[in-house]
Length: 204
Figure 1 (spheres, rainbow, N blue to C red):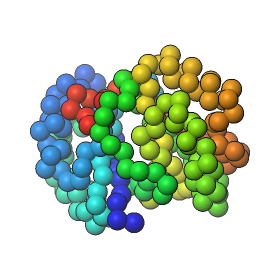
Figure 2: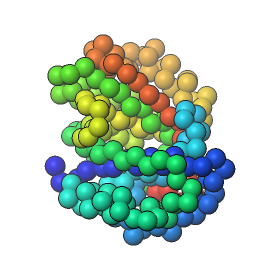
Figure 3: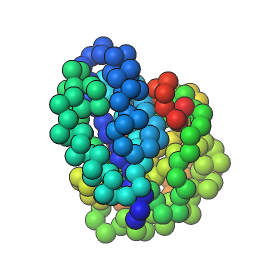
Figure 4: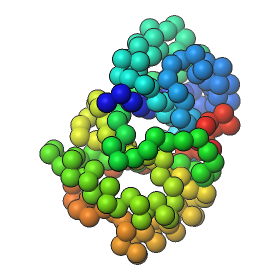
């Protein structure tokens, strides 16, 4: 598993957003890994910044995470940080790495917890269903959690508007292309956050 991903969530002080964005734009190039996307939460838990980075190896990710933990001013945002959380992920094996581009004004981060023992069959079900679902709207990726609560996976979708999101999701159900066969029965918890990409985010 040479490539791994990290989702870092920064809970920040209310109304500190602009200062945090400026600090992140300065600090991230030297923070390790490749920035895939940077986002601000808008629907869900507020005053959060989400950073998705890709690392060439688990060792590279561990080194970057340790450096961030040891820093006196993590990511240049220490003054405004309330809490910082990092999670490691592996991309579903049938998916290509996310590429930079403008895919929507809104990105939805959905985290699903699963019953034990069904992760492999869930990935297979997604492999069958994803092509028809992504014909309706772009998917950034689906990722298996490597730490924290397990089994758990993250899926990220792009939409041009909140209304388009509702319409596309309804159409996917109407056409019978989503959710994947057997998927809902295996889920134990679902959490969703709708985010807007930051100006310097490779995903826009």
